[in-house]
Image 1 (cartoon, rainbow, N blue to C red):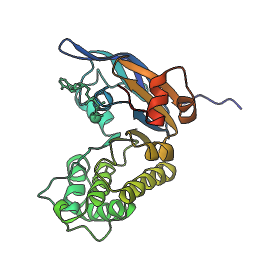
Image 2 (cartoon, rainbow, N blue to C red; image 1 turned 30 degrees about the vertical axis):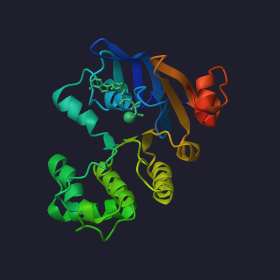
Image 3 (cartoon, rainbow, N blue to C red; image 1 turned 180 degrees about the vertical axis):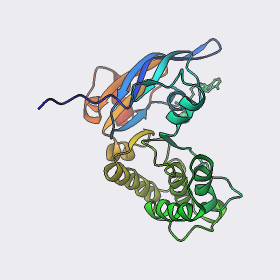
Image 4 (tube, helix red, strand yellow; image 1 turned 135 degrees about the vertical axis):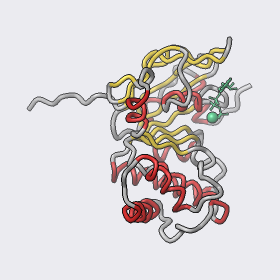
Length: 254
Ligand SMILES: Nc1ncnc2c1ncn2[C@@H]1O[C@H](COP(=O)(O)OP(=O)(O)OP(=O)(O)O)[C@@H](O)[C@H]1O
Ligand SMILES: [Mg+2]
């Protein structure tokens, strides 16, 4: 039987980002396949958040393209761009919830904005989405009335409101206690295996990397680009660059 190789769900092609004179990364190319969990690693300030923002269109690359399912997202405008954006869910570091709205209202917002669902259907979706992150029953709570870990999970429920094909996370476990952090990792793994959602996660928590990563991409500030990319084991066993070894063994650098 002939099998047609599937298109990468994301392809970064020669991405360069400069802010003024300063180059953050240059000529970065890689592909991500459907269903992958890719972690983006690297020291502080090497451009992890910038790369995530560039992949999601929050930051326009200075050069290069991002392709989504083979379509040029960087050049897309108007309805075409909106259609591609709907494939994404993004979990921001803070959880990204609107403080003055209940959890139900937070999740309802993207559904009211982007779908024609009736109020009844939206209610059902809210229950489903909150249920999928273990928060059914917390519909009427305000973000300030729940814990940090619950806020992250509620943010995830909102990011998933439109059933995105790709979920992006910027340091999801930042500020969480170890137990909440483990439960978020479990949730990421469960959603990935149950729904096949492609996950791109910026993190430098080693426990989390070891637990969730299928593939890893390591950026480096001095190299202004990728110093390792592959399966987690491939990246960990790449001893050609001492920075990688240092990262995984937590050896302080001067
Ligand atoms: N909009 C911007 N304008 C100018 N400089 C920026 C902008 N966004 C990011 N930078 C700079 O780009 C560099 C990379 O920042 P970025 O936030 O991507 O790093 P990071 O790897 O996510 O770091 P951290 O681990 O601390 O979150 C930093 O020096 C930052 O100051
Ligand atoms: Mg960052």
